[in-house]
Structures are given as C-alpha cells and as structure tokens.
Length: 397
View 1 (spheres, one colour):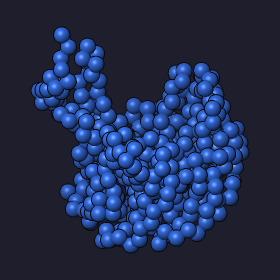
View 2: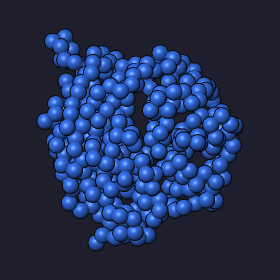
View 3: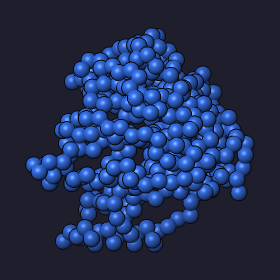
View 4: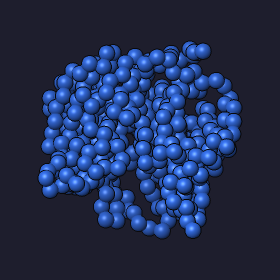
C-alpha cells in the first residue's frame, strides 16, 4: 500500500535529520553578511504574493537604476467575479506596477502602473545613466527615474513581453531580444538608449541535434552552441561561430545537451560544468568555483562596473523514492558575490530556501548589484533588503 503524502513528508524530514553530513570545506573563508542597510515590506506598495489561486509566489523584478535608486516591478492579474476562483493565465488583463526607492534609505520616490496582459516574470532593467528600461504588452519603454516615458517602441515581429526572452549585456549598453516562433527564434540586438537595431538574425529550432544557438552575449561577443556533435562556441557580432577552448575544460556536449554559460563582464565567461569555471574569451582561466555535491549555481547577476557578479547557490533537497513518486527539488541556499579582480567570493548570505518539511511553501530570491558594486539588493517573501558589500581585497571576520 502506498504511503500517504503526509507520511512521505515525515520520511523526508527524518531522512534529512538523521542523514546530515558535514559541509565540504571551502578553499578559503568567504566573508559573511553584516547588518543590512535597510529592509522594507513591499506589500505597502500593493504587492500581493499569491494573487487569486496562485500556488507559486508572484515574481518581482528588482534592479538598481543607479547607485542612489532601486527599482522594483511586478504584474498583478485583474480579479473579476468570473475569474476570482481561478489561477491567473498568461495573456489575461493585468496591471504592471513599478516603484522607485531611495537606495540609501528604502523610502519610496515614485510609483506608476500600466495596463498589460498578464505574464509571470516582468522585465525591468536599470541603466548606467540612471534611466529604467521596462517591457510591457508589446512595447519597450525607456523611463526616467521618476518613471516618466522618455522613449517607447513596439517590439519587432509582433512580439509580446510575455513570450519574449530579454537579456541585458554586462555593461548594460546593449539589449538582446529573443522572440520565439514555431520552429525558430528571431534575435535582435538593440542600443538601450536609442532602441536602434545593431544586428538581427534567425536561429532554427526543433532539430534533433544542436546546430547553432545563442545562450549569452556581451557588447562584442555571443556565446552559445554550434556543430554536430555540439560544442560550446563563441562568435563576434556578424561573424561565424568557433569552438571555445578553455584550459583543462572539455566543452564538447552529448546530443541535445547544453552547458550553462553566462557573461559576467564583456570578455569574461562563467561556464557551469560540475565545477564553475570563470575564464576569458581567449580561454584563460581566472578562477574556479567548487561546490558541495548536489549544489549548483543559478545564472549570475552582474554589476555595471563589470568587476563583480552575484549568484544564488542552490541545492537539491528531499528524498529520492520512485515507489513513492518523490524526487529531490531545487532550493535556494546562499547568495554569493564574487570579485573578478580578487578572483574569489567576497560576500556570502545564508538564504531561507524551500524546505522538505513544507515543499508547498516556496521561497524564491532575486538579486541585484549596484552599478558601483557596493550594494546588494535581495528580494524574498515580500521583503526587499539592501546589504553593503566589502571593498576588493577587504576581509570581514
């Protein structure tokens, strides 16, 4: 007879309590977080964590506009007597909310709302000149720090923000739009200040093998996958793909496999293959990030100075039991900030991740680094917290 869900969760909890193993030693001690500069509950601005019958918390985007301002945004589905008992669906009427806060105090500076079709993950970016880039419905909007519209432009190829992948370069000077079609993707590279198209191309999808596919970009480089069998590749804008060769790292992949890769500065990559390798585009390894078993890194978040990047360390939690139909799940574990100059982690903060005791109570975290790399913003469970970061080559005990 199959165990009940309640019994299964007790088994998971007992397994973790009785089977705790010491954490693997790290090569050097990472400075831990001190006291936060400030913390605010964003519910005071109208944020609602679980609208209607949602089972996952409503995502909130957070970004520094400049060193003095933090921007947050979220999309709330409209509630009517007809849909109040149903979970929100992509495309139904909704409202996009944006708020600007003082980065030193957390006090609200401005707030505006726009009507938009519902999509769960809003697109919001802070730019080096103190402006805000936001995507709503089928338009890109460039906003002032007071959220007034400076420039607005419709997305190409009849794209919408809900079906769009939007990437900002580490320098925050260029923007990559990736719009899905039935068997392909249309990609367009834009100048963030003028929205002028710098380059555009199409990539075919749906084949058994990876032919060529863009995964990350900077102002001058594209990183992705090419060849059969697939390899991790680079190319300059407008040139052909070529495999990247990193000292001591095999970049070749099995059929349909994809190795996660991100740019953490214009010429530096983070490649996650077991150990995360931080290397230059010319193949020189700067440093490596080694984690305990069943731990992994999520996509890095860079500062505008291109010298620091923040990342969430996740870990697999829970019991693996096929007869009980139970498997480990990903849970946020730590927030880390790395210095490219010092080639090490300079900040670490333990996060409250989703627990095997209560896997239905999901805890997600979102990070942002200030342009000068001196502050880290973390959003979780309706709380927005800003921490000061140490200087390069400065230790904390």
